Image 1 (tube, helix red, strand yellow):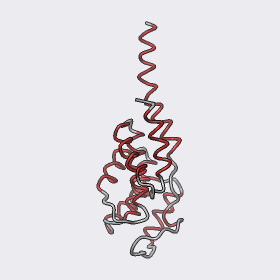
Image 2: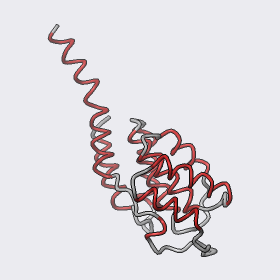
Image 3: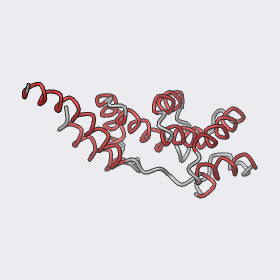
Image 4: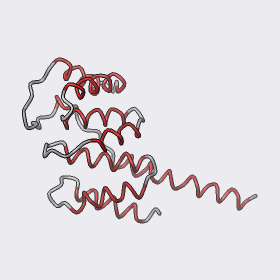
Length: 163
């Protein structure tokens, strides 16, 4: 009976490490209307974007998801709306939705592309998909121009110890 307890504890310890690492490295960004990165076409801030940003700021992620979904339907190539819809999903515990959304994104050299790659890797980490997360993080770490390169490298090293 004692050995059974130890094996059960081991099974539950690994996912906890994944979650702990996720919680250590996951820092949501400020809402897009609160930061000053500009997209390639520097679109005007519309009313729906302000409402989406306000919902995100107020931690009302279900509302933010609805607004960002509408905005993304209107501007399907917007990496800003893709990023913040995915973050809203993640903040609402919907990691599969975030992963599916981020996997559909094609880099188009916007200021948000690096963030999308980073949060995609973190979403996989949160789900316990260590190998996928590690591969994505290694890819980020290899790009010395990437804002997240050093942090990704650090996280890869920590993930290597989990197995």
